[in-house]
Amino acid sequence: MALSRLLNSFRVRLLLLLALVLIVTVSVQYYVNLRAVRSNTQFIVEQQRAIMAGVALGVNSLSSGEYLDQMRDEAKLPLLGDRDDRVQNVLIVDESGNIKDSLDKNQTPRENADKSIRYVKLKDISLPALKSAVELPEMNAPLPEGMNVTNAAATMDRGAYYFPVDTDKGRRYIIVVLGSANSLATTLQRQSRRSLLWTLAVLLATTCLTAIVVWQFTRPIKFLSTGARRIAGGDLSYRVPTSGRSDEMGELTELFNDMTTKLARTRELEAQLYNAEKAIVVSRLASAIAHEIRNPLNYINLTLDHLRAGFSPADPRKQEKFESLTSQLKTEVARINQRITEFLNYSRPPKLEPRLLNVSDVARDALRTVQVQASENNIETTVEEVGGAHSITADAESIRSALTNLVINSLQAMDGEGGKIAIVVSGEEADKRVRIDVSDTGRGIKADDISKIFEPYYSTKDTGTGLGLAIVRKAIDDHHGTISVKSKEGEGTTFTITLPVNSGDI
Image 1 (cartoon, rainbow, N blue to C red):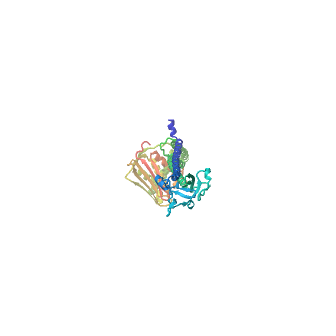
Image 2: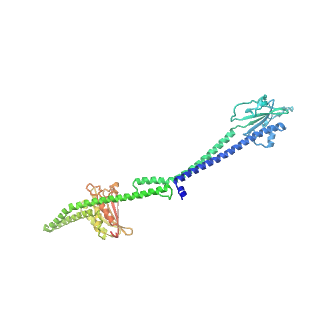
Image 3: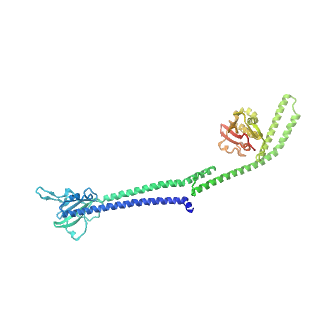
């Protein structure tokens, strides 16, 4: 259990990966170096064999009657010859500087026409720097002409070594001409390049592997960074994707998402508390309004009744006008009382009286409140039914109040004369819900204000209380409905309400 938990650790797995990369790199480097050592050893052994072959060939030539090139061909030694990089030539020189034998046929003795032997002089050929192979006392004797010995340090250029051999025909000198050491240097450079290429290949492969693994390891960090930016921007609905990892990254991702969930819940509670505080303020304000305004309204209402009872004109035409005006005044007084009641009920549990309503009739009733003012400003008002009549079970006064508020807002949004206010009633979800679109051709709502218009006390009007749309939203929420808004400055606004046909227990 402890071992499994240890292996699931991000840090332990990363350390194991680095250790694996190190082991693979060192192993490949060791293998390449081992092959280079074996190759160099083989090269040196072949070099030594070539030198020993050249010496042996020269010694055998002194004791036999064969020439060096014949002996080389018979022995089938590919390590000797002018095209070889190791031993390029073997010469046998007498005390007079005559070349008695050579692997180079151009330097071997020739027979003259009189049967005499013509020798190539050592001084007439080009030899590399000549050095003694061994230092013995008897080697201090004078050397033949053309054998110019140098004491210079070894270089990478061609070189030659000699040693004397005493025979029954006098002293002979065996000279072994070696190839340039550049071949060995070239071989070593080639091996170094090969070793470097292998190392680079391994490093490239391990780097790619490490990059892939680290990319997989660090993807949650990228997700966490994105999540932090989204949440800092206010999007508490964002969740960091989880990959089922059980290491520190997986645990951090789960903790981050849990923290985001708690933050979202905290924000909801803060919003609820804020709305509750606003509701309390509204309730207190409504109580004050009711106390200060309802008494004068009651007096006005009673005075209107007294006027209608005792001061009605005798002229039928004037009487009809008088009745119309006093009735309209009483209606407006009743409407003011209703608004005050709505303020009072805003922060209280709803007391709804649901009954079957024709939505189009309620919409037409809401439009009547602005009919006179709309006509005076040449504003067209229409109610349209899509798919026939639609009925819902709801509180008539609450729905009428909501639509009236929206219609009044639409009328106030008209900057000049002309325009249109339209209410469209249609069905949704196989007529299980009713949709009400209240649209106007007014000045529209600014994009920054759309998210705030349903908040209590938020108003873009100089004389507005900011409670109209808040009351509308509360009325719709009480009926388990939804309300949304679409608006564009200079083109108009559309409020969309959806209500269930049967709201159930409201």
